[in-house]
View 1 (cartoon, helix red, strand yellow):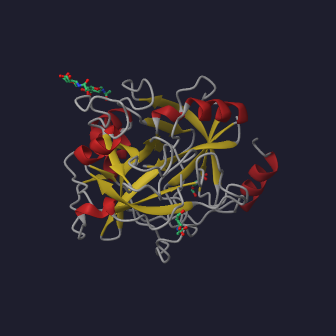
View 2 (cartoon, helix red, strand yellow):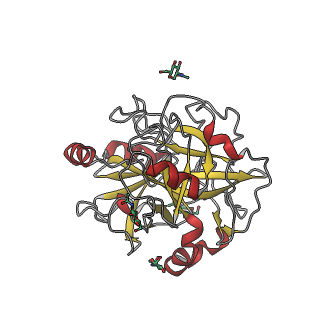
View 3 (cartoon, rainbow, N blue to C red):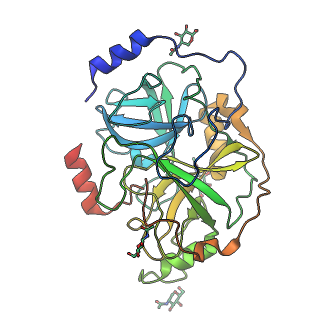
Length: 324
Ligand SMILES: *[C@@H]1O[C@H](CO)[C@@H](O)[C@H](O)[C@H]1NC(C)=O
Ligand SMILES: *[C@@H]1O[C@H](CO)[C@@H](O)[C@H](O)[C@H]1NC(C)=O
Ligand SMILES: *[C@@H]1O[C@H](CO)[C@@H](O)[C@H](O)[C@H]1NC(C)=O
Ligand SMILES: *[C@@H]1O[C@H](CO)[C@@H](O)[C@H](O)[C@H]1NC(C)=O
């Protein structure tokens, strides 16, 4: 539901301390004090947006310029998703408690990558154009995108954020505070091997495709989950954050041998530039120099909690559609 009273409150509160100076992408103004906690701090992940369908949160996304949000293709493939049913909430911290730093913006248009056909296919990425450009604030800032050749090394710990389920079928309790979790990257051959275990799929048939990136633990535990879809999976270098992936799919949440799968952003630089040329200033090269532990995925998860993937079982879809 779109609540007119909320919209009015936001309008009356008016100004949002605009920053005149050019803003660098990927640099939150709020220090990341409590990394590893489960609830984020306000302003810690200023590119995180909440996509609403008729006012109801259903997917995440990331701000990449003043007018564009990148999300998953599977978030916008259903017929019920139209420019008029869709709104983008920026500066959101708690879903159930709108705050003065939050703004609600209408959608001018959206496109999905034409290669996307179904869960697990190539191309799970979409671009949403906002009806009006947003002014950047402490709570609303774009993330950087990696250029094509950026290497996200196996064992690098990155962060996933969202308002998705805390376990399969268990939604985030009110007031639905933005959740964060750190998980290590897993390289493609290792991840593909894990996904073949007890899958019944011939090992010569790839499950993890070239435009996917995996992260998590072999033992399960911390993971993204339903409702996090389309949201950011980010890695930092010198305090600047890069969008490595988009929450895409998985087999359940936090299950043994089934790490989370993210759409690999380096595969889509050209597609993004072609469809949203103004994003160019936020596409950067970077070398990750942090010490990595290649076998981090073999260690035990820091917590059993799963956070924000639209891990799509047909039954989940049916439930979600009914709720919407
Ligand atoms: C679709 O996939 C093919 C094969 O991987 C690729 O060459 C092409 O660039 C993709 N198209 C888009 C629009 O991403
Ligand atoms: C952004 O700031 C400008 C200048 O202060 C203002 O005119 C404009 O209405 C603001 N835009 C939004 C979407 O708030
Ligand atoms: C897997 O695929 C390969 C190559 O297509 C084939 O030779 C092999 O028999 C298959 N294995 C099984 C168990 O189906
Ligand atoms: C994770 O689950 C195991 C087994 O269910 C339990 O013993 C452990 O305390 C849990 N850890 C956390 C951090 O909840």
